[in-house]
Image 1 (tube, rainbow, N blue to C red):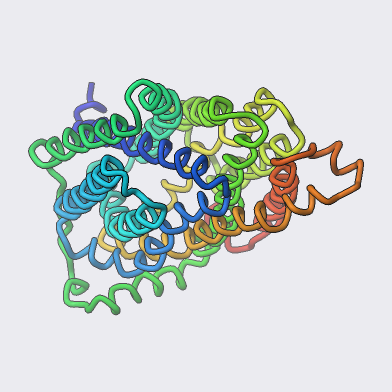
Image 2 (tube, rainbow, N blue to C red; image 1 turned 90 degrees about the vertical axis):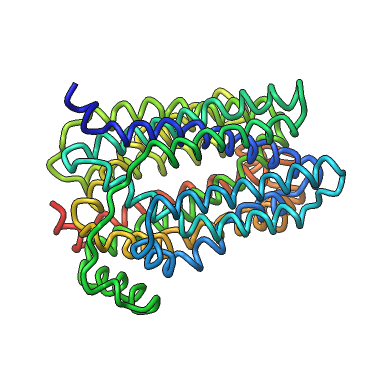
Length: 422
């Protein structure tokens, strides 16, 4: 088929990165459970993600300039190798009985730093390997692989930990890395962009050029800020979910809910891949996020059974791939290829800086505000709504997040700059 020929290198890269992502996600899943069971603190667990995202956000604005100047394939290989070294260090510390919480924080911070360089290089590489008419299809395929990883991760990780221990999970992660590394090294050819005068810019000038571009494109800038507010709510959700589910149920329930997220995004990625070009991509983005924000958090807050939590997960995530695909097409179609590394990096800083804030805020509010409040409350209304005992405070926080997320979607829909996309 013609489409397979046109997307040959993208598909090879996509499949091998899918395999590698599964290994990395299994390691992260196993370490989160290990850390929460060891500490019993939502904040301690959430800080694992904070340490990963904080350096990523701080360095992203400069990393795009590096990505635009350097060979994309080399950047991806170096960054992947560094991540593998961090994984090996984790395995050694675990085998020697020396693994401590601060080790994981430090290693996650170093990985986050390298991801800030790898992410824009990978995004630009995808653009270079994909004809413009296939942007939405390849975005849907990327969401498909991410959702498949979400489905398989808890099942495979839990089974492997039970039968062979966390060391086996990490070893599998290293095997998947090796396969993806060798395929990228020997079989993938990523075209290089012919740079103009930008290649003489300093690092600061290159970073500034990304900011200047967004200042002159208000629609894209406001869209980034919209997603930034959504990321704040979503990251709080991610940090609070393990604390609530593990407190009210167990690891199996957490795995089931996470798998439902994966199933929903898997179905959503099929919808995104087959969905025809809409009249207004911005309306699709706003409507998808409104459905997500106005359903999942409320069902997580008011439900006391995994079936209700799973229903919330499906409603909250099934249209996210369609949102992401349209968002991705807007960027790839509007930003010149020779500028994409810098603009993607500025976007990463502005859009993702709320993620470490959300992880920290979610963990802090659960441990220090909502759980103590629910433990001391005498209100029958609140206990009927959110339950009693550990986990009820997390449920109450989900309710607050549902209100905040819904209001964000309603307010941003009214931004005038979005009319430029219609």
